Image (cartoon, rainbow, N blue to C red):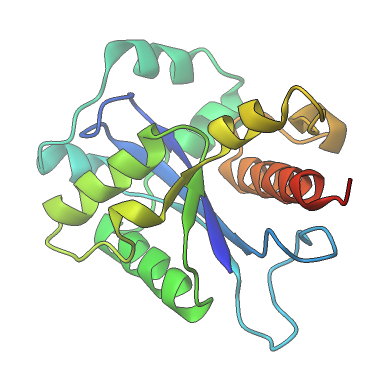
Amino acid sequence: MHLMIDLETLGVQPDAVVLRVAAFAFDPEATHAPQFDAERADGRVREMDEQCDWVEQVRRGRRVESGAQDFWLTQVPELRDRMLSLGQETRLVLQALSDLYADTGSSAVWSRGSMDVAQLVHMYKLYGLECPWRYHQERDVRTLAKVVAASAQLSDADSFNAPKHDPRWDCYVQAFNVWEAFQHIRRPT
């Protein structure tokens, strides 16, 4: 299994406040597409979507970038209020992510670009927790998509009618993209 990660944040730097953490376990080499459901056949959870306590993060020294703050303040009220609400203690969110990584037997962590992983690694250090993956287990959806772009068109979020700025949906779409790319690469010639 691999784990797709997506964050919603208040900045792009490694020490930016993280509002929401989502993760979705999937097998990029499976013959069937990833399924967007909460449990595997054995009944164990294979995804998470947690709101973090952003005020607590600011107290610990994580930063709010003005451009990101302005972005969230201009969103529709429902989305803005959801993202800026206080979630659970960030340490608990990180522990849940570590547990999901271990429980699913994940051997790699994916994200769209390097920002999300860098922010999580920084948060693990700040909270004195061990990051469950190592640097050589980090993967980038954008790089894989670029490699297959010349010969395959991957699905986009609009294909799924996914809501904007929803990290749970973003995880699923990105996991589906990785699965599509693996299918294309492995297709017999």
